[in-house]
Amino acid sequence: MIRYVIGKLGEAIVAVWGVVTIVFFVTRLLGDPAALLLPVGASAEQLDAFRAALGLDQPLWQQYLSFLAQAVQGDFGQSFVFNRPAITVVLERMPATITLAVTAMVFGVLIGGGAGAIAATQRGKFAEFAVMTLALLGQATPVFWLGIMLILFFAVDLGWLPTGGYGSLAHLVLPAFTLAVFVSASIARLLRSSLLDSMKEDYVRTAQAKGLPPGQVFVWHALRNALIPVVTMVGILSGELLGGSVVTETVFAWPGVGRLIVQAIESKDFPVVQAGVAVIATVYVSINFLVDLLYGVLDPRIRRKGQ
Amino acid sequence: MKAFLRALVQSRGGLFGILILMLLVAGALLAPTLGLPDPVRGDLRARMAPPTWTGLFAPGAHPLGTDQLGRDILSRIVYGSRITLTIGAYAVVLGGIVGVMLGIVAGYCGGITDRLLMRLVDIQLAIPLMLLALLVVAALGPSLTNLVIVLALTSWIRYARIIRGQVLALREREFVQSARTIGASTAQIMLRHILPNVMTPALVVATLELARIIIMDAALSFLGLGVQPPAASWGRMLAEGRVYISTAWWVVTFPGLAIMLTVLSVNLLGDWLRDYFDPRLRT
Image 1: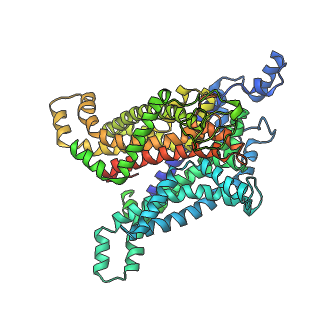
Image 2: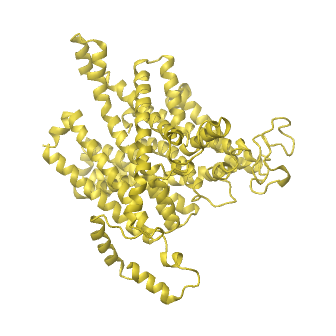
């Protein structure tokens, strides 16, 4: 088990290093921040002085090494736009992103998990058909369009909820629901098919033959094993929710990290882009590290394979 | 082939998917001959006209209404489908070629090559795809070619992972081992013996990836990083229509429905293909 954990930890660290490296080099392709940030009439000397102050006059590999050395300590430099440490700017936006992602994830898993379990146990009945149709539609709907439609209906027509912004529980309802639809559609389909597989397994038949009550067989034998792929999916979706809700955050004017990074890309604020992507990648990799550990608990076969 | 077509016709989802998809492709190919109003030059006297269903074939009829410049929404959706389907097709093929090749190499060669490639997949998975796409489009500049490259870049990992798994099993099969014994080179084995056997799973992944790519393409144009105006693209229509949401619901509703219908039919077809060929390909 310890070797399994250390191996996974090593993979996680390599992944974060890779992400930070890719982002460093891609942001260098975005353009010259000096030309963008200084006033139009700036002289060549002023541009050079500005670049020297930011360390942009050094060779690329030297910039990369000093960037890495500082990034390890959580220092991504000063934001060009906010004139504050980039990491602070990013971390300030994290609560908004996490609130949205966690709310959407909790509701998505509850709705999707319930619907998937109903669909699997009501094989061939209307309930299965209804759940699967809704899930297919949910997966086919672009989240940002769903968001716009919800705004149109609940905010513009009915006037029940605000069209966007941040601050109260009412502001959270529409964006969280939008993302929860996307999550629950994926979870419902996955849990149904993996339950259908696990309910056919020998261990379920054995449990039934032992005379265990059907509810106990379902929860402890069928559902427990069917949850393994769902746990993987939750890990993957959480990454998409943390960084990929860029568009949802834009539609609802939600002040999260995703929207911050989009704005930073537009204004060529390299340090904020780098810090933002590094933070999201770290969170994502940590979640998936925990998911890998959870596997070991759910599926003893994996634990033994690592030894 | 006959059995395949019969199974397709008998499946409800697969048939629905392929019919809608054929309709969309036909509409995209025949767009200039359908007698639709100009999708780019609008009729400024008919700005923000609501959908009308009377006199559908009369000149100046707008079954889905018009936008803020008086451009016919139906026409823009049909012309937009040309862009969406072209980008989707190129991105799926490009991502597929790269992904299948690397998947075969990783699975067949194993060892350090395999480990390096799989670490690369892990690294890319750690950046949310939307952020990766945004960064790269911002760095390269928004153009049709760059969009295809970016979408293919977000796509190759899915092929690589699944194909690698398939190849790991194929590698030990008799026909591969006998080819090796009679002295076939590694390249020969990969191309002649492995590749034909992974085409089916690749096709299944391609269909499911097409759906994801269409949504991502729409999201990128929604954020202004897609095909540049005045060309009609579904995502951009949504972004422009969003401003008029309180006065003209149709401008923002129909392009979204078009995306949804396209993705739904591609998904239905992909699900059916996967269940038909190999239900174990679920990821």
